[in-house]
Image: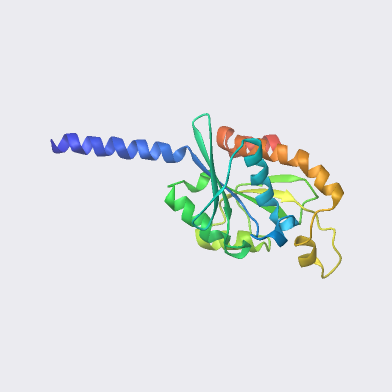
Length: 208
């Protein structure tokens, strides 16, 4: 009997482990509140919003963020927009990774990047925070720099001393129009991350 029960528990744990490997946490970084909604710093939120709109998903406010779930080809995508404000993003990331038992390699963080030209895309499996407060807090909470990030270029077209104003400024009309195509590409990237893996996704989309 004990051997039978042991086998049952082992099988249950194996199934749970396999299920967790098919879950992916996609985190879009940004600040909550109407005044931040259309700012460059909130591109992570905007990309997840575009994904949700395309797939007819609805975000619900849960612990530490707004959440929605999407399923595709046996994979479960958990989309998270932290409501902790940018500087405390790591708290929400760690909570949902732990709650859903998602392995670190199945995490993708979507963030703005001043060092990339507007609209350009770079995927990386590790790296420094580059002075980005959201990435810095994630790094601190996860205690590692080895996590996947989807960097979206917002360019550095600001004069000396105006970085904060630029990052928290709103997109121009021209940029807003160009973002539509970039949002479609971003949705493809998120799906590819789960279906094809980070390395194949980097090879396919980096620089596109």
